[in-house]
Amino acid sequence: MVDEAIRELPCVETDSFDGLLVNYAQSRGAQAIIRGLRAVSDFEFEFQLALMNRKLNEDVETIFMMPKDTYTFLSSRIVKEIARLGGDVSAFVPEHVRKALVTRFGPASA
Image 1 (cartoon, one colour):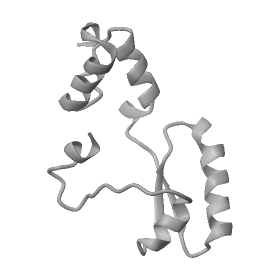
Image 2 (spheres, helix red, strand yellow):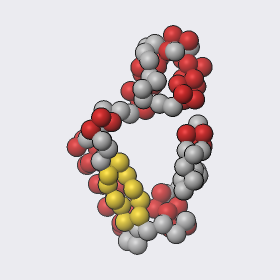
Image 3 (spheres, helix red, strand yellow):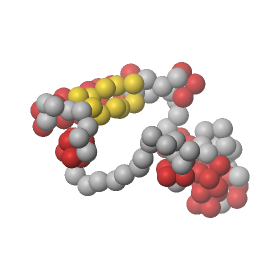
Image 4 (cartoon, helix red, strand yellow):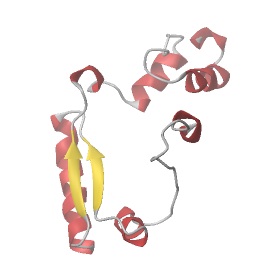
């Protein structure tokens, strides 16, 4: 689903890996990891991860970005719960993701 969502973004690619993110970043030649912070409550955990990553590899920095205020409440858990309870998630996900949620949770989530 991610591949389909980014198909029209030529400078973006998907990948998967096993193991530590900081090791994966180094194997790809990355100098930074970009992490999103939706709310202050995300910061403590993300900060701990960033410090641990720095201990594991001081050459890879972590950069935090905040979303537009219209997306701060959004999470995959909330979207799945809305779909599971039959709500309309079309404002939050691409059409192919909405269809996958309908397939998983039933037509009531259309």
